[in-house]
Length: 364
Image 1 (spheres, rainbow, N blue to C red):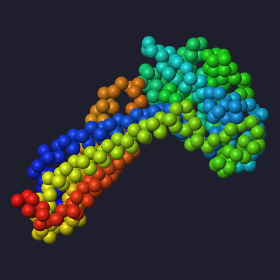
Image 2 (image 1 turned 60 degrees about the horizontal axis):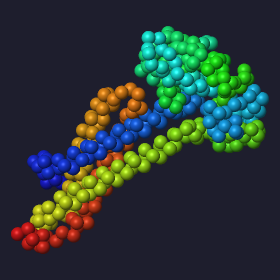
Image 3 (image 1 turned 120 degrees about the horizontal axis):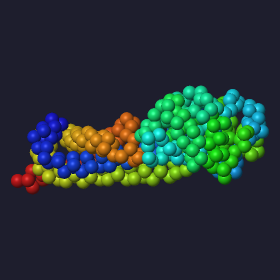
């Protein structure tokens, strides 16, 4: 193992090609993961923030917030189900908003609510909103009055909340009455009556059992757990599966690069390994040296790639949904190290088959 470390220190150029290639791949993994996280977090924050066990839709909505409509009568039926502790209405309107002093419209999701989500205060007064931090990028400030939608419905910003966006649009958390005013003024084709909401947020006990009990009691609803509701949002599941397929394909390339590089390196060292075996070095010790070198190269590549990804994130325009989280860095680091170990393990077969006498003879 000391020989492997000494070679890394004295002949770093031998590992330069592998380091450059793995740096590019680690950068690619971080950027792909950052895009995946940015798309997921920016689309689902409003639902993930709900302190709810299940979310109730109308059975004709196909688990879509925007198509769902529920009345007070359905609410009474839900409230009577065993295990239900609290029920609150929730609705979304996706619109553009004019920001004072700005020429471009801000994409907003006006969210009417009763039960405060995590990190969101109680509903503000009529015509006021709690705004997601994302809207700072659009020039929104506390105290601004936004003109929302084609009708220019005024909404005044009272404060900030975090990670509560809906389908990549900055959330404005308002009362249900304000939401209905916005919806009816700007989406007359999707008019909602005074007793109508899109979905019910339900707190209770039972999970999947509670969902089934609610649907059985109403006969007109489709109820999902909060996690299932997150993945029922348009495009979320497809994005996850597509990006994960690309990420794991890239990790397979990492494994192949490491395997090829260290197989070639082992071939070059056949004579050296033969001498070391002849003087008593075990196969396990020789292989441990290969693994140390592979892991060291992977770690150096990750550090360089991580710095480049951080710089790239700072330089990219704000409308690109790239979000590099600590969890993504940890996942990428562990994945690279595991791929490096597995890739270097492919050279084990060649190391174990080296015969000292023949290796020394061929080298001579």
